[in-house]
Image (cartoon, rainbow, N blue to C red; front, side):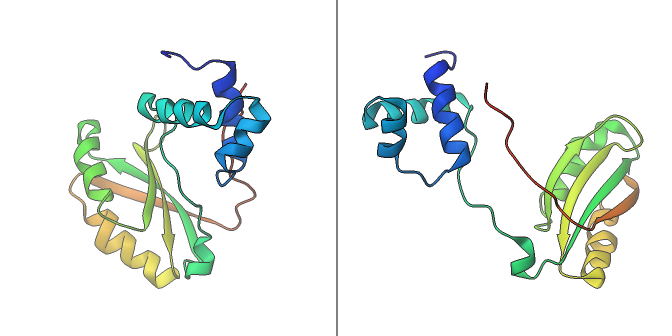
Length: 151
Protein backbone atom coordinates (compact mmCIF):
# COMPACT_ATOMS: atom_id res chain seq x y z
CA UNK A 1 0.00 0.00 0.00
CA UNK A 2 2.14 2.87 -1.30
CA UNK A 3 -0.78 5.27 -1.66
CA UNK A 4 -3.97 5.71 0.23
CA UNK A 5 -7.03 4.32 -1.49
CA UNK A 6 -10.79 4.85 -1.15
CA UNK A 7 -11.03 2.60 1.92
CA UNK A 8 -8.17 4.47 3.64
CA UNK A 9 -9.92 7.76 2.94
CA UNK A 10 -13.17 6.42 4.35
CA UNK A 11 -11.34 5.28 7.50
CA UNK A 12 -9.68 8.71 7.80
CA UNK A 13 -13.02 10.52 7.43
CA UNK A 14 -14.46 8.43 10.26
CA UNK A 15 -11.55 8.59 12.70
CA UNK A 16 -10.85 12.30 12.18
CA UNK A 17 -14.45 13.00 13.16
CA UNK A 18 -14.25 10.75 16.23
CA UNK A 19 -10.80 9.51 17.25
CA UNK A 20 -12.31 7.59 20.17
CA UNK A 21 -14.52 5.40 17.97
CA UNK A 22 -13.63 1.73 18.52
CA UNK A 23 -12.07 0.04 15.51
CA UNK A 24 -14.87 -2.54 15.54
CA UNK A 25 -17.36 0.27 14.85
CA UNK A 26 -15.12 1.71 12.12
CA UNK A 27 -14.89 -1.77 10.60
CA UNK A 28 -18.69 -2.09 10.63
CA UNK A 29 -19.11 1.25 8.85
CA UNK A 30 -16.48 0.27 6.29
CA UNK A 31 -17.78 -3.29 5.90
CA UNK A 32 -14.37 -4.85 6.57
CA UNK A 33 -12.79 -6.76 9.46
CA UNK A 34 -11.44 -5.06 12.58
CA UNK A 35 -8.01 -6.50 11.71
CA UNK A 36 -8.15 -4.72 8.33
CA UNK A 37 -8.81 -1.41 10.12
CA UNK A 38 -5.88 -2.02 12.51
CA UNK A 39 -3.57 -2.86 9.60
CA UNK A 40 -4.66 0.12 7.50
CA UNK A 41 -4.34 2.62 10.37
CA UNK A 42 -0.92 1.22 11.34
CA UNK A 43 0.26 1.53 7.73
CA UNK A 44 -1.01 5.12 7.53
CA UNK A 45 1.00 5.92 10.67
CA UNK A 46 4.10 4.37 9.06
CA UNK A 47 3.53 6.37 5.86
CA UNK A 48 3.12 9.60 7.83
CA UNK A 49 -0.47 10.12 6.64
CA UNK A 50 -1.58 10.04 10.28
CA UNK A 51 0.89 12.07 12.31
CA UNK A 52 -0.44 11.80 15.81
CA UNK A 53 -3.22 10.85 18.10
CA UNK A 54 -4.42 12.36 21.29
CA UNK A 55 -6.94 14.65 22.81
CA UNK A 56 -7.48 18.34 22.28
CA UNK A 57 -7.50 20.24 25.55
CA UNK A 58 -9.34 23.51 26.19
CA UNK A 59 -6.51 25.88 27.14
CA UNK A 60 -8.86 28.21 29.05
CA UNK A 61 -9.90 25.39 31.36
CA UNK A 62 -6.21 24.95 32.22
CA UNK A 63 -5.88 28.64 33.09
CA UNK A 64 -4.42 29.86 29.78
CA UNK A 65 -6.80 32.75 29.16
CA UNK A 66 -4.83 34.46 26.38
CA UNK A 67 -4.08 33.17 22.92
CA UNK A 68 -1.75 35.28 20.81
CA UNK A 69 -0.51 35.08 17.26
CA UNK A 70 3.01 36.49 17.10
CA UNK A 71 4.75 37.61 13.93
CA UNK A 72 8.52 37.28 14.18
CA UNK A 73 11.03 39.03 11.95
CA UNK A 74 14.38 37.26 11.81
CA UNK A 75 17.69 39.07 11.37
CA UNK A 76 18.46 36.60 8.56
CA UNK A 77 16.24 33.97 6.94
CA UNK A 78 18.88 31.29 7.44
CA UNK A 79 18.41 31.64 11.21
CA UNK A 80 15.03 29.86 10.95
CA UNK A 81 16.31 26.50 12.20
CA UNK A 82 18.15 27.87 15.22
CA UNK A 83 15.27 30.17 16.19
CA UNK A 84 12.76 27.33 15.72
CA UNK A 85 14.84 25.10 18.00
CA UNK A 86 14.78 27.78 20.71
CA UNK A 87 11.04 28.43 20.28
CA UNK A 88 10.42 24.71 20.75
CA UNK A 89 11.87 25.03 24.26
CA UNK A 90 9.09 27.46 25.25
CA UNK A 91 6.12 25.25 26.24
CA UNK A 92 3.54 27.99 25.69
CA UNK A 93 4.50 28.20 21.99
CA UNK A 94 2.25 25.57 20.42
CA UNK A 95 2.73 26.19 16.69
CA UNK A 96 5.42 27.76 14.53
CA UNK A 97 5.47 28.44 10.80
CA UNK A 98 8.17 29.74 8.45
CA UNK A 99 6.32 32.26 6.28
CA UNK A 100 6.51 34.56 3.31
CA UNK A 101 5.31 38.13 3.62
CA UNK A 102 5.75 40.69 6.37
CA UNK A 103 7.16 38.21 8.93
CA UNK A 104 9.73 35.46 8.71
CA UNK A 105 7.74 33.34 11.14
CA UNK A 106 4.29 33.19 12.72
CA UNK A 107 3.70 31.40 16.01
CA UNK A 108 0.73 30.69 18.27
CA UNK A 109 1.27 31.22 21.99
CA UNK A 110 -0.92 30.61 25.04
CA UNK A 111 -0.51 32.63 28.24
CA UNK A 112 -2.33 32.73 31.56
CA UNK A 113 -2.71 36.52 31.50
CA UNK A 114 -1.11 39.66 30.05
CA UNK A 115 1.75 39.60 32.57
CA UNK A 116 2.56 35.99 31.63
CA UNK A 117 2.44 36.90 27.92
CA UNK A 118 4.81 39.81 28.53
CA UNK A 119 7.24 37.42 30.26
CA UNK A 120 7.04 34.91 27.37
CA UNK A 121 7.69 37.69 24.87
CA UNK A 122 10.45 39.57 26.72
CA UNK A 123 12.33 36.79 28.48
CA UNK A 124 11.58 34.09 25.95
CA UNK A 125 10.89 34.92 22.32
CA UNK A 126 12.59 38.32 22.01
CA UNK A 127 15.72 37.11 23.78
CA UNK A 128 16.38 34.41 21.17
CA UNK A 129 19.44 35.25 19.04
CA UNK A 130 18.28 36.05 15.53
CA UNK A 131 14.88 37.50 16.49
CA UNK A 132 14.88 41.07 15.22
CA UNK A 133 11.40 42.10 16.41
CA UNK A 134 7.92 40.75 17.06
CA UNK A 135 4.35 41.90 16.62
CA UNK A 136 1.67 40.36 18.80
CA UNK A 137 -1.99 39.95 17.93
CA UNK A 138 -4.33 38.77 20.67
CA UNK A 139 -7.03 36.31 19.62
CA UNK A 140 -10.36 37.24 21.17
CA UNK A 141 -12.18 34.04 20.18
CA UNK A 142 -11.56 30.83 18.28
CA UNK A 143 -14.59 30.12 16.16
CA UNK A 144 -13.49 26.69 14.97
CA UNK A 145 -10.56 24.37 14.41
CA UNK A 146 -10.84 21.46 12.02
CA UNK A 147 -9.10 18.89 9.88
CA UNK A 148 -8.92 19.25 6.14
CA UNK A 149 -11.72 17.49 4.27
CA UNK A 150 -10.78 14.01 3.10
CA UNK A 151 -12.11 13.50 -0.40
